[in-house]
Image (spheres, rainbow, N blue to C red):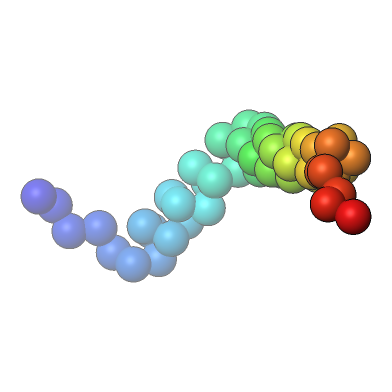
Length: 53
């Protein structure tokens, strides 16, 4: 295993991070979609709660 100097490794990591594409955007879209589905399910199922009055 070869030794890579710290500045070169950091520059390589920054370059690789720029080339990854729509990763962050896709992650945000998926999180918002899951949260929206959970809130929609809660809102819809809340109306079916039976009241024992």
